[in-house]
Image 1 (cartoon, rainbow, N blue to C red):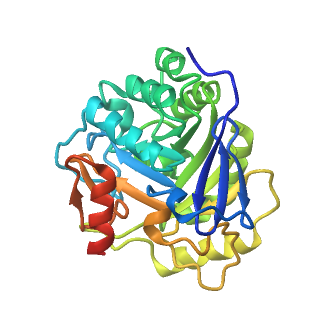
Image 2 (tube, rainbow, N blue to C red):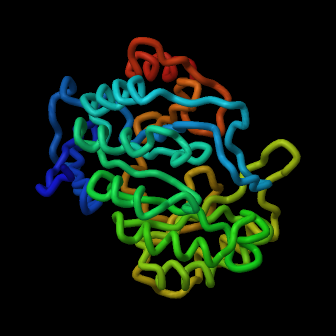
Length: 305
């Protein structure tokens, strides 16, 4: 059964104790509370997991691996339980398109029941149905919907109608809290005001900007679009929605709020690819195959990078 009781999970590090409530997303960091080193978390604060490389869309700027690969539900569950014991606070499922995984709802349910981690996933949204929404409700704590542009821009990028996206977002809003992700490209950089308007209208909690990264055949976001994104970040109108940006971006000269500026990269985040390899993030090539233990693979990755 879906959980009812609100539970605080704690994560101890050399920088203090971090309390997190997965149902609400509330974070509380007590920097003055220092616990013994043997209690410090050995897992990253957050882990992203590519359940599958499969995706039926053909977005030209997509960075995800295109070779067929898929994680099994049993191995994924074992890794996540180990990460939970090691102090990880949340998992974000992605891909590819994670809802294409045949055991997607089962993986979300099992993770919510058997761990204290927050369960989230990133999706294009077009596979969300009333049946899937029912299966996920109470087991998923946050959903990130990829919306790369509005109207004709979105439809050119995604090959799906903007009207259908909005219908799917209505279903998503009935599952749990959600946010909007936008890949900022040479086309979408000038639609950020409109995207903020739509995010508010839909009831989203966050607008997350992801500057386009270079891929085979594409060089990534251009200088003019990047400058427009930075200008918009510094001057956009006030909103109740959080506005965030990927850590992959160069934020020189931009004022941002970072609760963990002292945290090293692998303490903050690690990525598991659809072939069962551990990486610092989805963009880097260096990977350590996960064998018996994901924490052991993390130690190997720390030594390698």
